[in-house]
Amino acid sequence: MSHIKVELKKEDVVKLKEICKSFNNEPGELINVLHKSQTHFGYLPAEVQEIIAQELNVPVAKVYGVVTFYSFFTMIPKGQHPISICTGTACYVRGAEKVVDEFKRMLSINVGETTPDGKFSISCLRCVGACGLAPVVLVGEKVYGRVSPDGVKDILKEYE
Image (tube, rainbow, N blue to C red):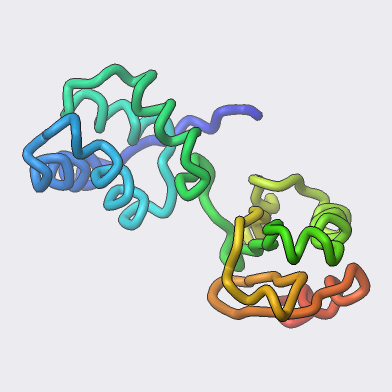
């Protein structure tokens, strides 16, 4: 995956430093700092990670390790309509994989990517707690249940 260079605005850098300071620049607060930073920016590009590492006085590699370990954190901006497909056991057993493949095919992107126009991004989730509706797809906050590969085009049509 190619790395997009993100130019941080001066106020973004100030905001990041404030977030770090709100946790007393404590290295042990790294996950909380990352959560708050992602809530603010929507994602955690390398440039954001570097400032956090600097402020908390931890190696950039450690910050990157945490960001890549937890699936909640993302290094790419989410699309305007983020699509999340549940791949927990119930959804998986009922064909979530085929639904994922259909979204990938129709949008011409892979899981973890965003369409060039910034409209859609695809990610997989563990369990959304709606197992009775498996397979489940979320578009933003909206839940779609019992989604079949054939239903993918209808879901996408709603957001055109």
